[in-house]
Every structure is written in structure tokens, then in C-alpha cells.
Image (tube, rainbow, N blue to C red):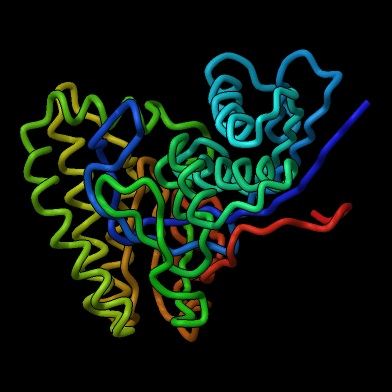
Length: 326
């Protein structure tokens, strides 16, 4: 029996300039540029073991076996890695998140980033970060960005993400207000397709998103919080407006989401620098400076509808763990 194993940790990321829509559905290429912050408080640990005695790929997520489409997505990524390596061995995949899965917290980003890196490391391929990013992107576009720590971008139509700035560039705080930890009602891929096909606002989203991306990138590199926060909020609201314009509408925002957005605006009016963003889910992520994070977190934690607050800073690159580490 021959086994080859690697264990990897990857962090989720939150898009400050949003990604929504595909330029090429078959190749999974994004229709708009996006820029994200990798979050050190949302982690996935994945172990991949290639075993010449396995007849099929096996996978578990948080201890539960995968089947159907989720397992097929895992196998598809493993097949891409096997093709590069000239390997036919099946694999056993064990993946665990320390945050809610499939609820709008980008668990697919950290999950497929970790899987791509662990599989390539197990087979000792020595691929560049960009190449691993491309493997992850083919399964989940946002996963391309989770290969990189700090701040990363994925351009429109790009096959690989790239680093915009390291974590040390700016020690921002991102507070994740979890409002509903359950699975979201419609997946991102089907939501994007439905929006593109039925929303009259989708074309305007595609037209406007690159300009907002440029605003976000300039403010990030200049370390200017107010223009960064304003552009981040604009990007999120534009994206959700395109979804709500679909027929029937796609509404990921829950009553608690809207209430927390109002809270953040009140905090800002009272002098606390805080800005919100939301992905395809009900949770609100609040950007602020570390020196204000405790006060903002307390206000979020005490707010009705918020189940818990996860405090995050800029996270590290996806990386291999030593045997026995978690």
C-alpha cells in the first residue's frame, strides 16, 4: 500500500470589491474584477491522502461524508491535480471549518484553496502559488484569492489571483456578525446565472464594478479608511441590487442584516469608523481599525439578531501544516 499525504490550512476571504457573475461559465472565469481581505479568523484545515488501494475518492466535511454534487466538485479538482501529476490514485479528503459552512461566509473559498494546495503538496508537484490559485479558481472563483494572505485580487476573466498587498500592509479589523448560521437558500453559482439571465440591472453591475474595484484598490494601497469603506459599501449594495432585480428576486439579506447595516451607519454617525459589506448570505462583515474593534464588536454582539461576532484580521497565505497540527 502506498499513501501520500499533506495537510493544509487556508483562510476564507471577504471581497471588499465584490465578485458576482461569470465571463465564462464552463471555465469558471469571473465577469468582474474583485479584491479581498483574507480573514485569519475563518479557517479551513484539509488533509488529502492519495491511496493506491482506494477505488473511489472519499471526502468528509466537518466529519460528515460528502456525496452527489459536493463530492463531484472535490473529485473534479483532484482530477485536475492528478492530470498534472500523471497519477491515477484515488484520494481520501478530510476537511474541517471552524466557522459555519455554506451560509455566506465563503467556506467554498477556503475549502477549495486548501484542497488544491493539499492535493498538489501530497503529490509533491512544487506548483507556484499562482498555479495553485488557478486550480482552486476552476472550482470556486473566490478560492483563487484564498491562496494569498493579506489582500488579493482576481481580475475579470483571469485564471489566477494575485497578491495586492501583504497582511503587514495594513492591520485592518473585520468583524463578522453572524445572523443566521444555517445554509443559504440558493447557491452562489445558480444565483449568478439567474441574475445574469433575468435582472435588468446586471449589465449596469458589470459596467460599474470595475470602476468601484479601482476605487477600492487605490484606497487600500493608500491606507485611507473612509474612501475604502464607502467604496466597499457601494460595491456590496450594487451587487445585491442586481440580485434583487432578478425575476424572481434573489434576496440574501435577512431582517437582521438590514438592522445591523443601520446600526453600522449609526456607529459611524457617532464617530466610530465602521463600514459594512455582505456576500451572498445574511451575515454582515464590518470593517474598522483595530483600535476601535472592541467597541464595534460590543455594539454588534449586543444587537438583536446577531448570534455571535467573529473578530478577524488580515490572514496568512494558505500553507502546509506539520503532521499532527490543526
